[in-house]
Image (cartoon, rainbow, N blue to C red; front, side, top):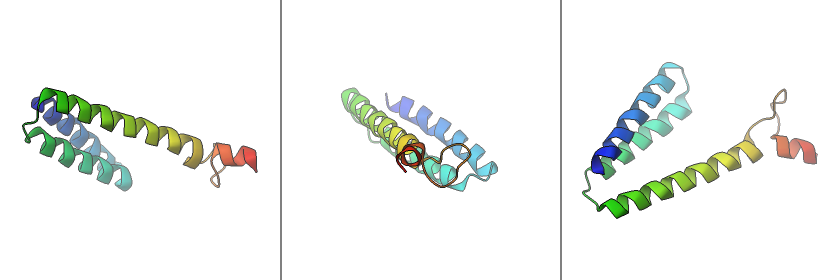
Length: 90
């Protein structure tokens, strides 16, 4: 299971490099950080159950954060001021 975290680290590194080349600095920094976390976790030698629980927690936080961003923070199409939810409320 620790090798799968190294694989995750490899792919997040590839995404970070592509984001850096595309001048998406915030995304690149986020994925460079994820790369460091995944690689560090892979060398901790935890049990398989712990690795699965960590991955579940990571996915839960990612999905909740993405959903929050898309509903409340992301600008609506054609409008760069407010999110779609705030635009309909105003």
